[in-house]
Image: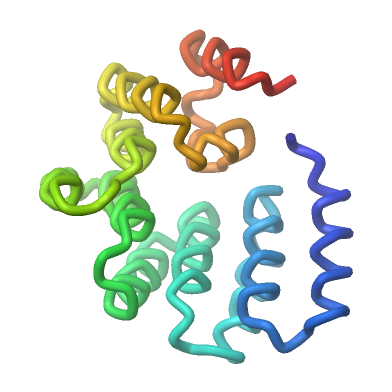
Length: 186
């Protein structure tokens, strides 16, 4: 909903209640990331990784924050670490493909799309992950087609559609605004 200060307050409370939980530390970092507070997010996620260096989700969110902070090489390393820990993770692959595209490595991003297609024959792969890669490749029509599929499937990843920083370049698109309305975001 974009109510970051309220969300940060709730995450701080959770952290007070369970300061040694890698998940709580990671979720706090995730809220900071969504609020465009990348330096703070990276610092918080480092704390989560000190608690559990093998927590794939902390590596994933750390990579997202580093990418938005302009540290693409570090972001890709985080995504690759997450993938080594959790080899079949459409979330991680979507982030990795999006980062490759942002880094100008369209061939690698396309290979990630191919991998997601293969996985979708055996596992659920949210259309959101394909959409984010197409968006980063500048393929807006394909991206919005996948976002539409995600909407039809009621993909839970659309919960962050309004605030996901990697989607910032799409916000001026009329299709983005229409989908926000259909998702009942104010």
